[in-house]
Length: 428
Ligand code: CMC
Picture (tube, rainbow, N blue to C red):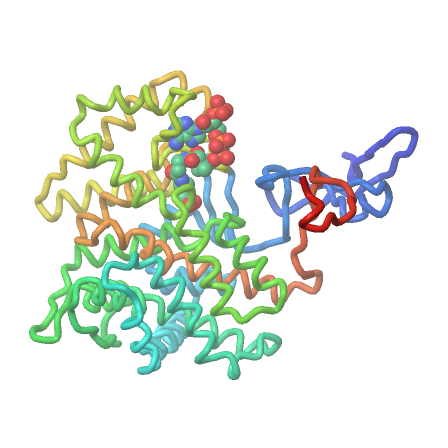
């Protein structure tokens, strides 16, 4: 088997190494291409470009496989808990019992935020989107920890990771409380990660908050399913921001901004809004026709994925979580019925079959979050709490990579060539 690729341009050709990972497609190492040929590669959207080496998450989009550090996502969602998964993503292996307990203790010790940070919320409009608040408030954490975060010190990187994972739920719950005019609740470190977040979000200081184990379990699964997804847009944003040596809290804020978009994490909000707009199964054909119409910008939200050309394995688990929580809470949700029928119709339609468009994680996550009681505007915030683990694990991996360089893509320039400045009074 050849381990080089020959690239010929005119009468010149050169060999380029072909690198193999532990699994997945080989990659052609074209780092010397520009030096050898004076040519760049052109790959908008990075559809054919591996930007880094990573040991964290593996996706086989054709088979519909997602592994965190080698473990299938369905096994982790079924058998693990969010903090154990966070440990796995950060450290590479599942923790021993003492390591698990110590990690849980460390994260728990960081759940409170600096009291002064709470003042920031008052600067936002009450009706501000919570993702806008999260971009600002997580970035603002850099102001509190900048001097104490030497990114070149491994121990300080670990502390920054723990702070981010631990404080995200506190900040997110405060964004929610601020929007509904209720007082902020301090964390309760006797509770699980998910339980603590539920209490800070839905509890009030005037009375005890009783956690429903069904809801807590669904919340844990939701967090596990979205914790990492290799080099997606927001993770690549965090890596790119971090590649310049920027403060990690500021980098996570950049990731939150990217996640907000409806083509990425914002799709869960858009998907539920779409399901509500459809309302009843008899209106599905109308929306399917719109999704297929080239002249209509409408897309089926929660459908399609850059990498999965098969059923998104997270969507499989999420659809089961949605069914379970509705059954266990003894509720029926017409939106869930619309989602199931829409999925059935789309999966049998040649347009979706030919383009390999399947439900993604966001198709059912909205049903679960809505059943828990979250308003749609909080959906992407929950995604951010979970994905913060992946972001910080990937940032740490990048910081430890001896081959790490500042990210600096090139371009195909198609603007004007050099021309002389014309004074204002001489312009036509
Ligand atoms: N509904 C209808 N048509 C679609 C859809 C859709 N949801 N997604 C893709 N297509 C069509 C698209 O029009 C294009 O058709 P053609 O080849 O005729 O031009 C073809 O499928 C390929 O689409 P693309 O936009 O070139 O594919 P992409 O890999 O650049 O985009 C995507 C992937 C996720 C942005 C896109 O599928 C999409 O916009 N989906 C809806 C938004 C969504 O659910 N996003 C959540 C992604 S999963 C959560 C996460 O990881 O953040």
